[in-house]
Amino acid sequence: GIIVDLLTMRADRDRYYYGMDILFERHPNIVNRLCLDAPALIPTLLDGLIWRSRTTESGQRRTNYYIQHMLMDAEGDFSKNTEWLTANNDPKVVCHPIVALVTDMVWGRVAIRSFMYGKAWFLFTLIIFVLSQSVL
Image (tube, rainbow, N blue to C red; front, side, top):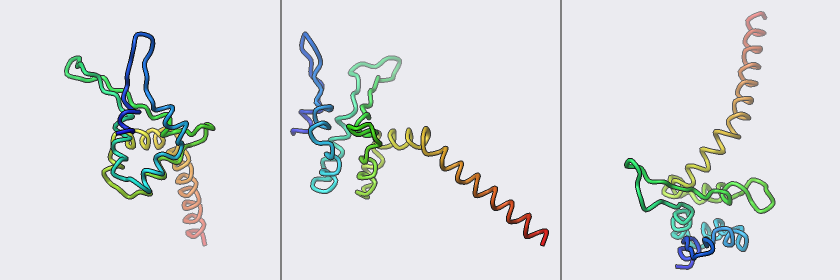
C-alpha cells in the first residue's frame, strides 16, 4: 500500500509528484530492509521505479526507468542496492527489468574494462610462462 502510493506519479496544474526521491532520501537502505524483513515487497518497489506510457506508438510503449538510486547513494558513491538484491538469492528479483538494466549498465560501462585488463594481464603472464618453460 504505502510503497505503491509513494511510487505512483501524480500531477496537478503546477507540477508532478513522485515520491521516489523522498523515499530513498528518508530510507537509503530501503532495499536492504525489504530484503531482510519483507522480500515479497521487493518486486512492488522495483515495479514502482518503472513508468510505462498509456499510449503506444507504432506498437511500442514509451517506458522510463528510474535507476538513479539503484546506482548511486546520497554521497554519490556506488550504491549497495545491487549487492543486497543479489545476496537475497531470489531469481525472480534478479530477473526484474530494473535489476537487469542496472547490472547490464554497470557491467557494460564500468566492470568490463577492469575485468578485461585483468584477463589480458593473466594471458600475458601465461604466454611468458609458456615461452620460458619451452626454452628451458
